[in-house]
Length: 497
Ligand code: UN1
Image (cartoon, rainbow, N blue to C red; front, side):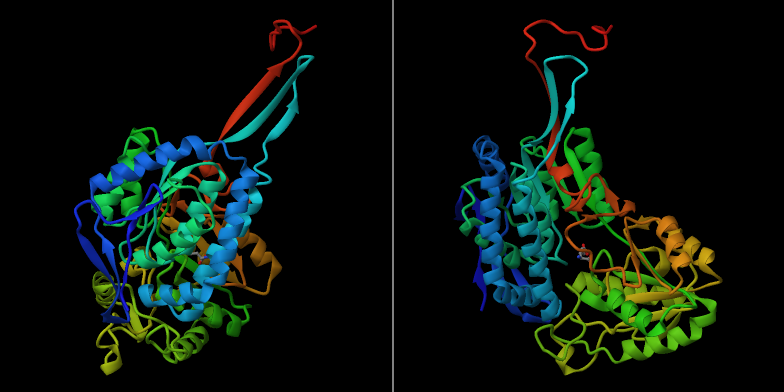
C-alpha cells in the first residue's frame, strides 16, 4: 500500500509549496508504488533552512548530555521498529531482507554511539606557560548542515550524518535520495518522536538537481555532507569551497580483494561473493576487482564461478533470494552497458552477463551476477565504478604486483587481502592506498565505531562515523580558550626569565 509522505519543516509535516509530487517505486516490482512524495523546489528549501537557522540558536545551548538522551531514545525507537523499517528498506531499495535489517541496525548502532558522545565531546586542557592562567580547547557547533544522501543505504547513511550533526549541536536540512524517500521519512518520524525539538531536523524531498544543489549553495547553510557519485561530490566541493562552507564527501570506489596463493581459498571465495554481490554490488565499498595470485588463479575462478552461478536473484523479501534488483532503469542500463564494454574490451565472461529472463523478473530491474576474468588493469571495467552486480578478476604475479594493481586506481575507499602469511598482511596493511584495509574479510561491512572514508576520488574532507578522526571532526569546530586570572597583563613568549 502506498504511503503519502511529506516534508518536515519547523516541526510540521507539509507538502511542497508547488503541490507537486513524485512516486517512489519498488525496484523488484515497478507496479508497486511505495510512496507519493513531495517534489520540492527552492521555496521549500528556503523555509527549511530558515527553520534550521532559528532552531540552531536554541539547540546549540542544550547541554550535550541532554541531546544525547534524545538520541538514546531515538535508538530505542528505531530498534523497536527495526522489522518494519527493514522491510520497507527492502521494498523501496531492493536489498535482501537480512540486509534491509542490517541497514537499520547500522542506524541504531550510530544512534547509540553518538548518544554516548553527548557525555564525552572532549577537548584538551593543557598547562599555560604563564602563572595564573589556564588553557583548553572545546568542540563547538558549526550551525546548519545540509545532509544529502544516496539510495543504497536508505537509513544507515542518513544516520551517519544526522546523529553526529545533532550531538554536535547543529541543526540539519536533510535531502534524501529521491529513490528511497519513504524509508528516510520513517527514520525521521522516529527521531522526531524521540523528542527532537521543532526545526532541529528538517526534511526536504526532491531531486538532486532541483533541491540538492540549491540547498548546498544556500547562504543559510554552513556545512554540507554528501554521499554519492564522485562527479556530483567534486562539483559540490568546488562550489562549497568557493563559498567558504564546510564540505565532506563520500564518493565512489573500485575496491580490490587480493587473493594470495597461501590464502584459504574457500574463505576467499565466500568473501569475494559477499563483497562483490552483497547489496547487488551497490555499495561504495563493493569488491569490484578480485586480484588473484597466478598460482591459484584457475582454481579460484572455478570455485568463484561455481558459487556465483548458484546465487538466486529475485525479490529481496523472498527468503530464497540472495541478490536483489538494481535500483532503477537508468542504473540497469548503465550496468548492462558496462557488461558490453567489458566484452568489447576482450575480458572473458564466465557467468552472468545479461538481464535476468523469465516471468518472475519482468516487473523489476534484475541483472545476473556477472564475473569477468582475464581482465587487464587498463580496461574500463577495471577502472570505472559500475555500482552493480559485476566484478572483474585480474591475475597477479606476486604480492607486490597485486598491490601495484590494487593501487593503480583513481579511487581508494576499501581494500582487502586474503592470506595466511602474517608478513603479507603487514605489507598489505602498510602499502594499500585506501581508507580501509580488511585482512581475511571482504571489502564491505565497516563498523560504525571507527572512521569511515577513503582517499583519492573516494573521499574529500572529513571522515564519517565514530572514533578519533571520525564524524565529530566534521560536525564540530575547535575553539581555544585562554583564561588569565592573574589580575595583570601577562605576555606570552615575552614575560620569561
Ligand atoms: C556505502 O556503500 O556507501 O562498510 C556504505 C560497508 C557499510 C557501509 C557502506 N557499512 O559496506
